[in-house]
Length: 147
Image: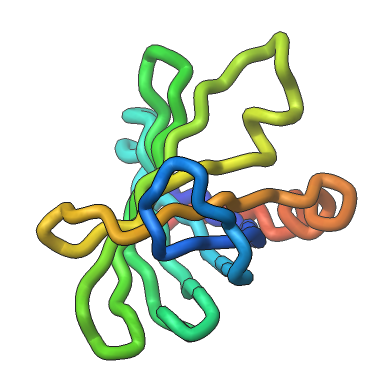
C-alpha cells in the first residue's frame, strides 16, 4: 500500500507540576518520525507516529508510538505513548486548532499534557517547531512510497 513518511523535530520545555501557572523550565527535546502505513489511514486523516522522546531526567531517549490526526473541525491532535526512565508508561496529548488567520503559530506551537497510563495528569509541555531552521529538513524528508 502507498505510504507517506516525513520527519519532524519538536523542541521545547516541560514541567511535571500540574498547577496552572507552573513555570515550564526543564528542557524537553522531542524527535519523532511521522509516517502513515497506508493510504487509507492518510485519507482518514490519521498518521502513525514513531520516534523518540527525550525529557531530561524523566524520559531520556525513550521510543514513542502514537498518532497524529486531523479532525473535520480543523483540530490537529498529537498523541503518543512512552515509558519514563523507570519503565512506567506515560502518554503525551497535545491539540492544535488550525486557523488560516493566525498562521504560522498554529503550525509551530504545540501545547500538551503528560499523563500516566491510567490518565492521571503529571505534567505539561510546550513544544515548538522552528520554521526557520527545520522547514527545509522537514520538506527534504518527505517520502511517498508504493508497496
